[in-house]
Length: 384
Image (cartoon, rainbow, N blue to C red; front, side):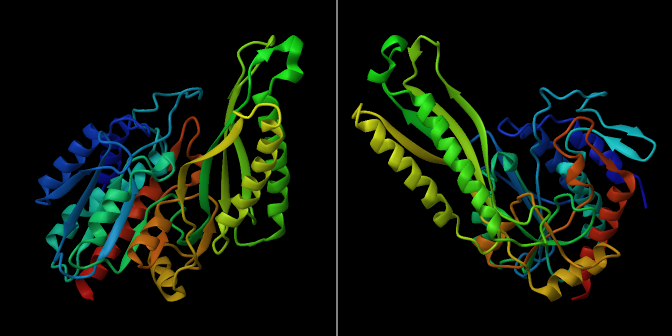
């Protein structure tokens, strides 16, 4: 096996494609890599912003049902992390390749690009789709335009493989997510007359306490295939107040709900809205202009178990352990399944335990295993 995936990963890591920022330079570079093998591609704006780009390419007969290899090109930020090396320069130390995005998930993109010349040289009976998105790290915001393109294609694919890091184990389920921002509007006043005002920070804190109570109650319904075997509710950033002698009239915070396949996030969030409504009524008894609003910021569906035969078939060619697993982190897989109605599995090199942290890395053997696996996917498209 050649070192080509490592060379390609070096090129990919050099682009600081932080989620929410432009990925145009990386997309241009990928397009050039594909063109060198005679593969044309379509570049289209993401669903989240005009300066974020998605890419789609097809190798083989587009009028047949094939296999989609899906990945995102964005990475999380490095600010506040203590890296011992340049995060945007691939560094090899023995058999570890360090750099932002090596595990999540430019390693898979490198393996995909490495097999393009091989796929192009084969007599494919069914097509290989390459689908690269942006802004996945912001809550799977950017992939919509790619899904639109695939849904409108002459022949929908028969299988999608999302290459998030699973150690080359096949995962066939993950949790869903809904992320919301809560805005609390109170009434300002001098702190010496605090009872005449409505303290937005205090009411936000009371709602957060009640959300924590709701979150604890989510542990009752369990699925032991997940590391955290139940739904979770987590509070994020909170902002409010300018001075201790001013009763704050505004406070906002964010929270996310992660739920199991088969659970209804709407009913869970209904409990949140009822608590917010009760607090809002109390606030308006003092200040009619007060209120609490909830704004959905991001959402993607859970991925339920795939057809066991499909999951085992893909798993057998990817890993010594073919039994499918569940992953706690979210992916675009749920959106692919929901929109296209086809089996979707998650399988890619590296470990999520190494992602989103300083000195992120991937093992070289994992990268080469992904290339071997993808060559097998290509061979499957030739023989069936």
